[in-house]
Length: 431
Ligand code: ASP
Picture (cartoon, protein in one colour):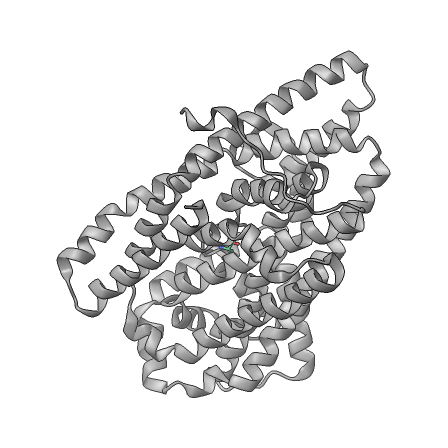
């Protein structure tokens, strides 16, 4: 049986059993699922453990093998333009769907107020975290690390990427023997990490089961009921974006059947869905890109780590729906001009969201402020927090699928043939 089939079974079984425990109020079963959640957390920690060595080694090889800084500049330009464009499309889809479904007009004022009170404290914490965020200039400056080791230690991917690219570019100019020696180490690290990922991924089906069962067993289903139109607007928008935007890019620009593509990459969105973290999924994303889709290392090692940090179509779309929802619920009309502001700020704000669980909710505050909804931010966020985990899972799966679509697009424009390159890690069977 293929690994992704096992992961899918883990996911479905976790959801069904978690739901059973929840609906039938089987307290012992719910407690059991909550007790086994650490299996899932251990998996997330293990897979996150390899992110820094993988990104550093793989990007170093990728940059050095390009051999030409102009090519890197070209790939960078294309990648960032593509990321911005698809994110703006995602936000637009989010706005359109909210204008049609009007999720905020379908909620009773009593439900609104009781939800806002129930999650008041958590929302207050999110607002505090948003207030501590650096300014735009600081964010840009922070991309240049003063200490690359510290950036790595804090898993701050953007500064790590900047340092590694400069180091890789400089490496192409040093003496051949020395360059070879450094690259050999990087290649060794890269391959070793790939073997580790294979080991860790064997835990994935069990981890996914544990994570999903715990989330579903704990989930307040009555909350979902009252926020059902909001949740459906987000989920529907995400589905539309994946099917229409990614589907068209894949079919017309990459020249690959979207269903075939999805089958090849499925492990990545499944892990993203279960972990709610683009960063934690990055090792899986990079492995499927190279082995299952056939994207070259020089493209994937750059486009994917950058994507995990700055490309968040799902998050941006969710921000658009959430902003409209909060505006509708408090009876604040957003003009076309306001909605264009949402396109701009949600696109930019999603760049600033880290690829970790719930990052989107903190960034949402920026978008709310941009259209004068800051006064409703605390109550509005409290309102939607109850269903945020489930929506985070969905949007993270879309974020990761977006990164992989982008990498395929950039690879095609660089003239690459996308043919799977299954790698047989010989020692992978003998941990
Ligand atoms: N969890 C998302 C991610 O890692 C970010 C977010 O939307 O909260 O991609």
